Length: 236
Ligand code: ATP
Image 1 (spheres, rainbow, N blue to C red):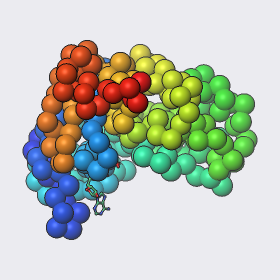
Image 2 (image 1 turned 180 degrees about the horizontal axis):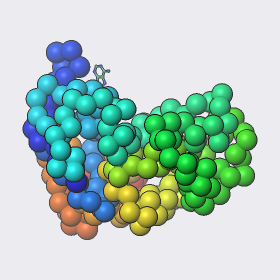
Image 3 (image 1 turned 60 degrees about the vertical axis):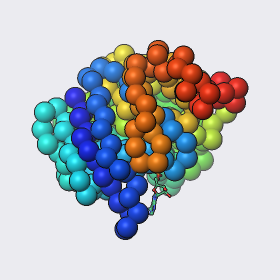
Image 4 (image 1 turned 180 degrees about the vertical axis):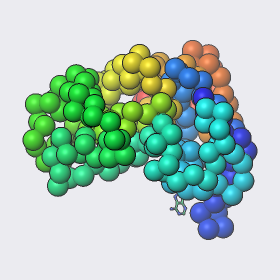
């Protein structure tokens, strides 16, 4: 479904991505792991069209989409939930959800909002509350729900568990599984390596702008290199 080949992305003269290759098969959850600052967010932003790569290609459903803008990619079916969520704090939950469907012209948005709130009952309870008054976990749920309203084929999730309490993190991972079971493909960046590998089918590990290890999630979970570096006691 997604094929990234030889991507090199710069911030000015700094080469943040040094030739990334990765693939995401339809219907799967693929995770990108790695320490802070290795380029995971840059990879997601490059795929989502927020930053343009200097070299390399992004193919989506067999089409070369390299260099397209983020809004064009949303229309093609790629939606990013950015790190830090970026929900609209002075809009209500419902208004935030409607924003997710801004490019749609069909008449099913209202029905889809009802449908998406089945995954997130707390959003239904708080549908008229302002986004900025929600807790961190609820804001993350709203950001994911809003992205689903764009009807993505591929959902890019950048560190959805960041800063959340363990119980809420468990909820978020459960929801990601449900999203996959509903037929949406997911590319997931996570610091929480163990939980991410438990729900993923395949994983990539990055170090300073490169992929250094890749494999089936079940194999990575027991790979001594991963266990030692990323699955220590702190990342349960
Ligand atoms: P984190 O988990 O902290 O988000 P990351 O793996 O997602 O880390 P990136 O945010 O992609 O890493 O950053 C990759 C590299 O690019 C880092 O060295 C970072 O300092 C640098 N970088 C990121 N954003 C910018 C920017 N806007 N301008 C300059 N350098 C940047």
